[in-house]
Length: 111
Image 1 (cartoon, rainbow, N blue to C red):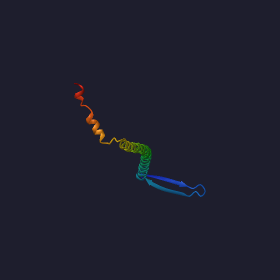
Image 2 (image 1 turned 180 degrees about the vertical axis):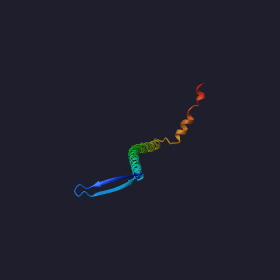
Image 3 (image 1 turned 90 degrees about the horizontal axis):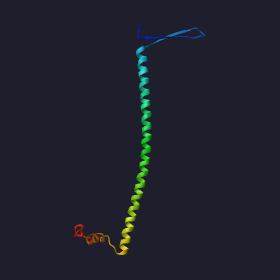
Image 4 (image 1 turned 60 degrees about the vertical axis):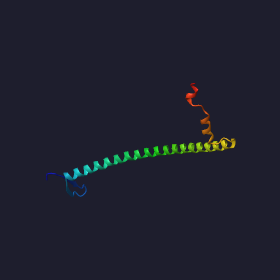
């Protein structure tokens, strides 16, 4: 019986014998399957850890995004208030263009 492993089981009470054989190829296949399952389990655990790390990063980025949006809203509100105050004081938004025209060109200062 080459290529097979034979097992002999003898019951201690009755003395009854049982014998069975398993092919070495079958044992090799079971061993390879076990290694494949072990490898996929390790790879899955690593991917799970990576997924958790990415979730943490995503949460941090969402917090930062919300902070930036809050700052953007604040800046927008300040710009609205500035425009309102300019209108109250009689300084139109167009006055910025007028102040630019009142400035002397840089080459005129050199004279």
